[in-house]
Image 1: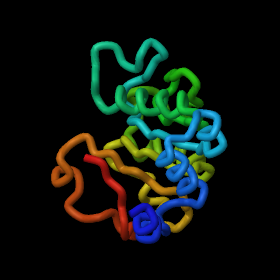
Image 2: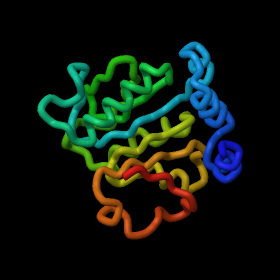
Image 3: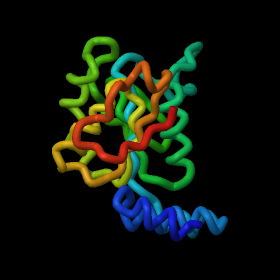
Length: 171
């Protein structure tokens, strides 16, 4: 039941997010959904610059998926941010630049955007190394992190991220 789900996962979600979930479950109207808009950050990789012409041309990797998710969340009324290489664009989304494409690794990129994550209600981590979990480990990030794995989970993680008791992964 919904009550049991909320009880079990209460420590993972903010009150605002739970209210948004309930609103979604009851098939609410768009104007009702806007009252529950969240600040969501989608984290891509520092590899490919994304553009308003549809993300990446001729490529359908995780950067393309990050662009589509960010655009879709913005269209649903959420205040959406996308961490992507300098010069990236996404309609209705605030881009947080993480450095020149193909010139910084994920750790260097994280050093450029980590403070922005502290202001979010939810983080969708599509990067390979899932640096947002380090903020959870340090106890400074209260927002839930959805780690999206674009490969078999056993090829990305042998152990849970340290200090994260209940990670949320989509594989």
